[in-house]
Length: 275
Image (cartoon, rainbow, N blue to C red; front, top):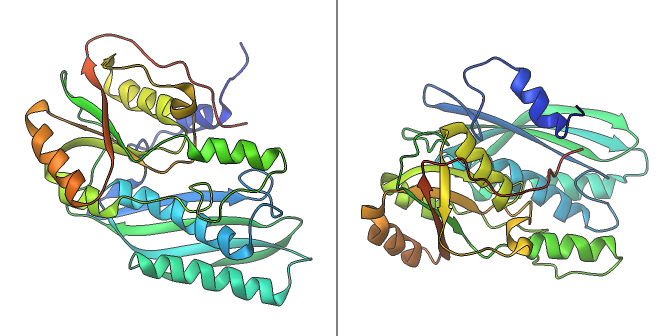
């Protein structure tokens, strides 16, 4: 049988007990890393160098934010193509540093190599006294997502067609829900960021907890299959519904409760975003 998702196949071959969340938790320190590669995650003709640097840093900071952690340090590896000018390198460096500083994070090192394309790989070291994990679901818990989903895939499809999209598009500038997660943490059971789409990431959370779900209302595929949103998928006990909604309103965070955890094997039909 052919392997449908080589990324998850590889991850499942690793044996560390620390694998499974958005970041590895060791004591009060969290470690995470994501790649942002030209012609895999973006095309240079789509984005300015500053936009590339900002999104590369944001998608990495998102792993820490999703786990209720404070990003402290970053290590950045960059593959620099020959046609990248010194001015563009300055723009990239400034964008990376300014975006990191917005979240209290400092770039303390990394590596640079020459290459054919612009590739970035970033490691984030963060701290948390009460990390939000993917595990811990209980039957009857409510599942919810933040924000309005669908814009990232819509705009990505437009870019593939050669169309222009707004400079403030979620595809360029994901919104991270740091304030909501920090203030709602005591009421949340589990959480993760939505990078592979609501359908696929809901399945991941259900899989690791060995539960299914009952859907409250149907979700359109344009919403469920939109990857790279970097909004939050969270769960909480029904008795905390009022408190979570109150935090969402206080932090201007749109929140949609779409299902409850159940003892079944139901899953969304989702398409892999990898390979």
